Length: 45
Image 1 (spheres, rainbow, N blue to C red):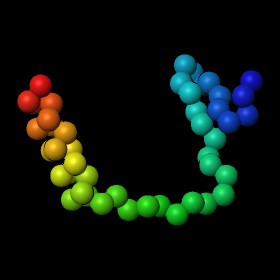
Image 2: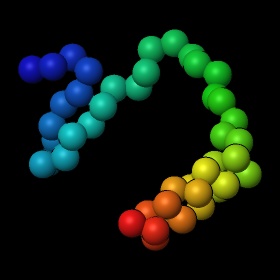
Image 3: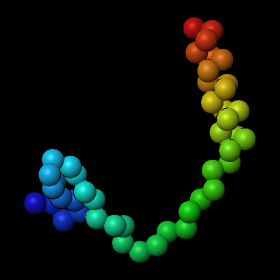
Image 4: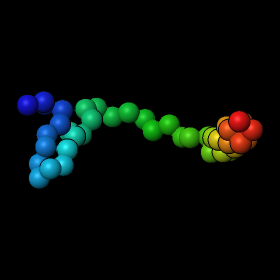
């Protein structure tokens, strides 16, 4: 058995992370622009 997760009723359950970590904010506009750029490149293929 693995200490970080367990299987119950056919589902995998992970243990809560140890310690606290600060959440990082995702730069939404940058992410949207990057995703649109990838989509344009894929459209050209």
